[in-house]
Image: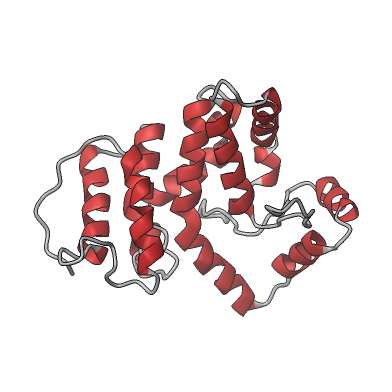
Length: 232
């Protein structure tokens, strides 16, 4: 739904749905929030094992495309504007260039997704989804050499989605990795993008306003001392 009340078609991008759920989880904890919010977030979590798709590596698939054929057909029939059906079709087209484009973008957004999952975990720590094999694969992907080598070169990574804050937050909430790993991620984000002259994250990015604003993501991190660093 648009801010003016206009009904929009289904949003077929997974991270949009995920962050809508994470925002609902934050609101659900407030005393004046309707119980319907909590109910809908729990339903979202209940359906995640079907709706979340992964590459073999554990990388989260960017377009929304449930594993269940029945679920896909139901969504196509319900979407009068046909947007979600088009997304299912284009994400299934076996064009090598399309596949590479989707996977590259997914690498840059993976930690952004994990940050939202961490917000959900804080509110719903005992949900059974966190014990699934699918979730464990998605979580562990950030500790692979493949991810670490690719994400810092990705235009959707640290120049836009501050992976140096997002990965450590996921590590803290899900209790994986070490203190030194988290320190490394945070330090590298500042080394690549912090400008001591402007006191902003405006280096090596095409969108300095957005990246600077996203320092807010670091406010949820535990206090940690960082080594002295030189901007790269």
